[in-house]
Length: 298
Image (tube, rainbow, N blue to C red):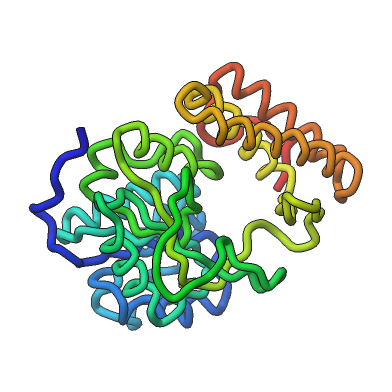
């Protein structure tokens, strides 16, 4: 069972941002987050670091961990969980470094959480994709939509729940951590929802991905990301196929459709197809962690 969260402050929020070669607008985006949270941790996975110097004067509530190596998104999110627990925060807000939050993001997510009975383990944030002009779910000022999984960025996560189920899978390194985490929370009795009101501007993947009617746009990722998406998707599907058959069937269909699209429509198609099958082989072998294949490039 998920343990009770009564020992945590009722509404306190700690945010974690995973940084990796962040652009020049990072400070501006963080400045939009800081007024909304009780603490903010930036985990810098850039090999040479640099965030500590850049962000030193931004706000006393902001702390930076410089790993001096890319330890992956899962390890960074787990550092955020530890920081939130250490600060006595009830919630962890997980954000990508390029996400543009709205000024009422945290308040909207708190209201969404309060609208759920029983309280949710994870409340994702509805978002506007600047490229397509579409939102993730039909927008409204109030309310939530029940979901099987939500994306990492813009999610408000119950810290007690996350710690009880073991945090994020660091061996995934990057990609599909959010989906696996949500599925694991559901398997332990947790609820996953998403706010109806948009709370951020966010795009998934690179531009110029293929668009498929009824499915929508497919993210345009490089070969290395294709490797991780394939490997981690197949590992997740194998683990949850019996408990979440509909979700897993859709995920597998999307994965295979994505293979066909990139083989026909995308640039660097040979590299991407090779990365796809390398990821599938490593999934079967149970080879997790950072990609061990030197011939798969970003």
